[in-house]
Length: 223
Image 1 (spheres, rainbow, N blue to C red):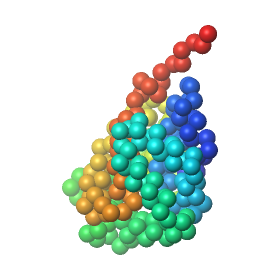
Image 2: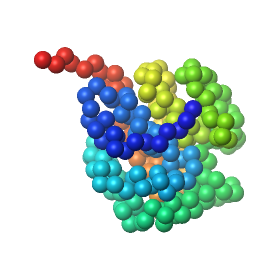
Image 3: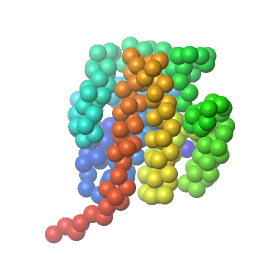
């Protein structure tokens, strides 16, 4: 399964396009996923430093009643050049998610939050393998992360949205909200001043807003 780069030139119009709700939301979920699979590249950051994207963030924040979070994210993109932000987010990502485990790291794996023992490769790992098989997708061979990594779970949700698989969308939404909220509690303690703190909060609000009735509402006939 390829974690796709979001096409921001299409994003704003697709979100507003009549009858394209699932496809539009898959692009949003893919965008979140890209920030958590690895430090974002300079090219990806440049795609977030456009007037069109800032307009999208403004509408996105208003629709979720999360303007404070989207304003913080927009300011981060505006205050730094793409190369400066690439270095900054690389430092933050490694310190939080990819460095030596310690008091100031945050595990991006669902299994870690499954019980009090904090072990990996538990039941969520098995469940994700099953869910991905049902969608006929798999993790790219170049990706060494297990399927219950946050970014891969988000990419799986994006694929479920593209396939308009209501069962998988519902399962992934419930699952993600539950464990990502636990992850967020830790992140807000150890990394509240990082870019990832408002981003993860925004993700939780966004996931909570996904309404299956709206996603699968049939377009009304046009005269």
